[in-house]
Length: 166
Length: 166
DNA sequence: CTCGATGCAAAATTTTTGCAGTCCC
DNA sequence: GGGACTGCAAAAATTTTGCATCGAG
View (tube, protein in one colour):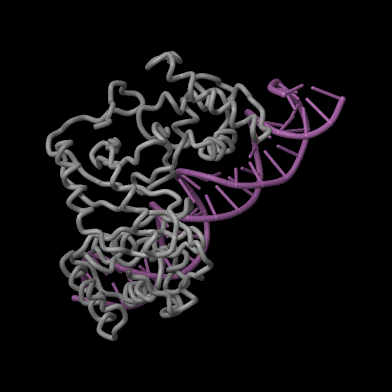
């Protein structure tokens, strides 16, 4: 599908969205929040609170761990960031690239990279299942844990270039 | 509580499996491990390590928190227990009822109950997607977070009666 | 100015680990 | 009897919170 993966304008959109969201909640725009947002969107893959702290500090050294933890819920509420559970450890987050299409996540166990695949009918399926139980869908995800058959190295924060959208 | 509360044979099978698994690994059979296994299978829903400790102690008061944490990995390795991520807190585990069919999990946000629904074609889909990426599936899950439209109370450990398998 | 936001550090939670005693095989 | 297993308690690791100060609007 049309994937405007990395374009200068991409850095604008999240910020606009975030700024509007803050305004709508009567929250304030601060340098720390801006730095945290930027750091999150610089991440090629999922990240932990600690990862985010490190990268946000690279942008604004005054960012503290407490602020990271206080900002993360705001970001998830805004829909810009999403929680995911990759490994079995801490909490992981990742940028919510598209709100439009439902994506299946293929999580590579070799390098923990995440590939997002369009799976539109999946969304329909979830709704049907929930409806059968008399419920309504809040969110859903299809996660496939898999591993490469050949050694294709994955890209993380520190290894730019990694992009995955089949 | 009583051991064979649900079905007489149900209490046997997991234990046989577990015993064999322990033997295959050269691990020993202890009262604590037996109590922990029983407690896990008494759970109607998912549970945390702390929940498991409480219920295991009801069976064998000598069970310690450390042993719970040391046994949990063994249980997951054996395939009898499975990790799930329901809310956003601690680790949750639940009994791995069926290895046969792929199940979609409908997680109710109102009461955190989990309904497992057969979704066989989902498995096929995951395999296809992974194959397209040159990977092979290790495991997969479809989780649907939903909420009731009417207040249908959920069943937890202490509230027997809750069963869900559509 | 006003009140939200932040940093720091202490606290709260969940999970892990060292050690000495216990008990399965 | 040997070595795995356990309980206890201290330690780690992650996330939360109180308080004084700072800064956005």
